[in-house]
Image (cartoon, rainbow, N blue to C red; front, top):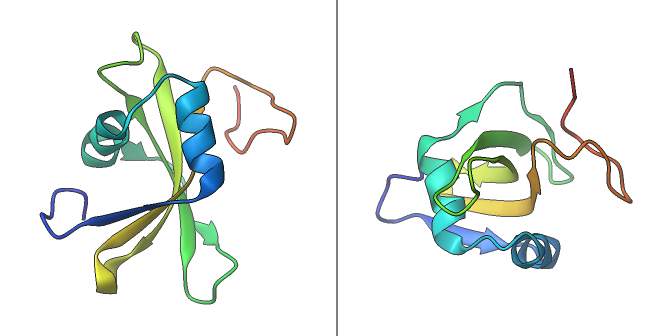
Length: 102
């Protein structure tokens, strides 16, 4: 989907704030969407029949650190909703983490 020219990327306000806090930009998000990996099954989103996925990968502006995007894809409308963005190597935040550490 991320490589489709018709892709529409929708941001939750939370995701925009986290992106800014981490010094990342829209091209970083697009890079992870295009080149990142999903390592786990999706979990149900609040909207029926939709699922949240974590996509992981480094970005051009991350200094070698990997980023995780929590997204909800809508294949029918070629839309990806970005829920949040985080560093993979951060193990805790105020709200906790959805990325397991080893």
